[in-house]
Image (cartoon, rainbow, N blue to C red):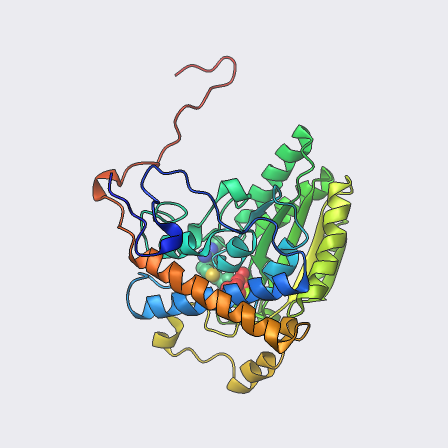
Length: 350
Ligand SMILES: Cc1ncc(C[n+]2csc(CCOP(=O)(O)OP(=O)(O)O)c2C)c(N)n1
Ligand SMILES: [Mg+2]
């Protein structure tokens, strides 16, 4: 079998059947410097991904997470390595913050065989179960019941795991989210509902779609809910910490509304459509509170420069790795479509 490690020295020897060990990242967000590093990593990852969309290496476009990085990093900093997350169509930041290898993630976006899911999932379906990443999800609101199911399983197995479900303000009126919150509250499951309120669902401002308040949705089920500054990684972490401690101790679910903003379009197609639903002045105002700058303020200029240089090299390697990797063999297009080896319940027959 040909080696598919591309030109990147860090990933040499990554063949089709090689066991791959995630290099540095497990629970990697313990200090302000590490949190700044991860915000920088996600930002740089997204910028490189935007380039690859432009050059046609990533087909179909992406939903960039730029501007919202403090939410993923603050929440994941409160988690254990074996905790679980589910994510959204705008999921790169969550997947990276939970510890996925940026090179394999980029390869996934570019549809390569070395990708997290061998190039079959792409941007909106990236997953790495070994890191507790149960998957991004292209269906708005659909990851909430997956999280509640995983939390039910963890609760009954007594593993002490907590499950986070990330979703946008656009999911707030999805019935399935409300059903998921109801069961999580009723059964006191260890779930953290994280709403990333970036003010818009595609082009629809939240004021035009959501009656009542965001936290009110959760409070209706008796779920403790707070609003937090989603541009400030330390504020997100401290709220997430409390919620995770409560869940791990058997106290049931919590809900965080993280108020944030996306600096780029809803999707990379947006530029082509020339959609006009928010002003430059509004975008500029939010850029004044860039989560990267806010997190960087805790560090010296020298420390920031060192981290920035390391991330630049890491992402340059990641691009080389992704683009140097083969596309999947079309002969295997039907592989992995169906589960195998499932056992039926008592009384079941094939
Ligand atoms: C059930 C469902 N309805 C509609 C869509 C199309 N869609 C994709 S993203 C999106 C907006 C989501 O907004 P929000 O949840 O606020 O997330 P954001 O894009 O702001 O991160 C919509 C309507 C979808 N993917 N799934
Ligand atoms: Mg939104």
